[in-house]
Length: 328
Image (cartoon, rainbow, N blue to C red; front, side, top):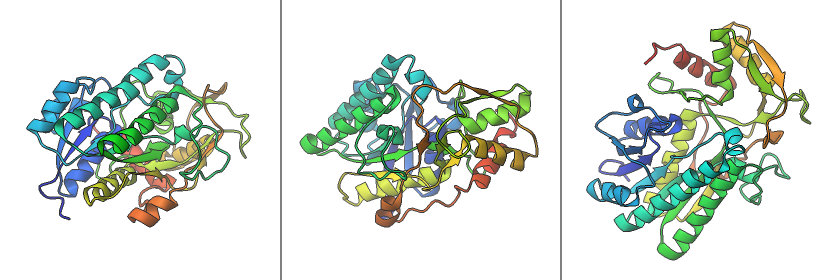
């Protein structure tokens, strides 16, 4: 099926993963409409002709947008993502991530849009019994962020069963890296992701705090599955294509199946940049499991997706190039 004449609505499309996915959709020939309230996204990350500044809580406004710009599917990124923050102010995570998603789904119903790819998280698994984690592991989140995403996954189940809204739920961990062509990258404020924080420490000389070195891992620091944002964007595209081809609702992990510890990432940053990273070890961060690696065999076998950019060296190199671009 040709992507031409297919329009995709990307919520949160001015954010990190959303803006990269928008670029990949455009590269693939799709028309794209972006909805973002710019509370944590960046206006300059999106073509102004495609950007609609709107909050997904505005149910009527979102429905009107989808009727004025008829779309074949929604890719839903609009969410708060900081685990630590979710354990301090859980109410804003349930309000934004869960209630916002319910508003979006209600708007989709009003506009008769039947396909959605949901940016979920492997945080829904909590501290899983098996690693790499298969999709069959039960929900067991250990932080409010993960719980807010579980609630949306459950909403999607019922909207499919009752209203015929089909969904692809993608669960992943640490999105990282930047567009290989330098068009988009990571720019959160406040920044909570490891690799940009390591870069900031190099650039400012202010030591970055690493959370805990007493975990039951080989070097005592947390291990995570780092997935390049371009690989992640392409996973969302193969998922939306499956829906557009009439596929049933499903859930897929997106990952490399291999994890890197905080110290291993720090070492990779030092190797790529040729600079030492000033750092200090702090206490563990609440809600952080020691080891999280996703098994993406199902995605690879059923949808033909493969990670192409997710070596730790490529992740760090593309992110470092973005960090050193001319500041917007």
